[in-house]
Length: 224
Ligand code: PGA
Image 1 (cartoon, rainbow, N blue to C red):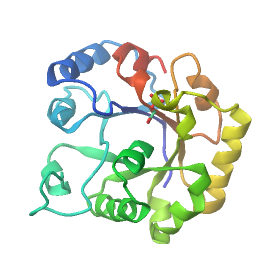
Image 2: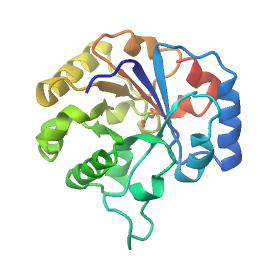
Image 3: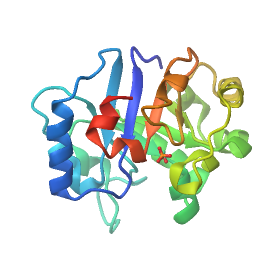
Image 4: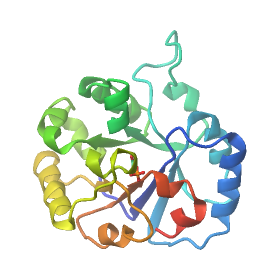
């Protein structure tokens, strides 16, 4: 797949009450945004309803996970039929926090990719450098051209230390991703904030950023 604009993806993780989410949307609508970017907001599920009810088209709507199953007896899961009518366009899948804290396996992530694609939701698949090939091997090769990859070194994620690699190391990893997946869009994530976002967004081979802590503040997010 090819993106027409670089993606700026907000991953709120398990942050924000409903009221805080509404406040964020109101603030974001007042910020100057850059037309060369597509903003994507991935809230926790309860905030999906207000996030999806934007009056003007401020951003695209995404989710942070998805059930591998359809509607039915899967207690606690959120299935694609549950999401109907909410305009969800993207799903972050296989985030390293889910792999680490919830033991999410690459084969489960692969099933979720299939489920998302069946519902026309574009998967943003997070992969780890030391396991690029293993994680890729679990994914049906016919899906490679339909997904977006997010390269997030675990040590660079703000809550795991926030140690960003030199850009040359990141570009090497991005090239490795394309050696495996072909010409997929690749996002970078890990402590991106308004002070350094241009380091990544200024690179031709990086198609956008996946942003955790800096996305919690609407003003900061708009400044990326
Ligand atoms: P961070 O999170 O920007 O807070 O490092 C990124 C992520 O985990 O997606």
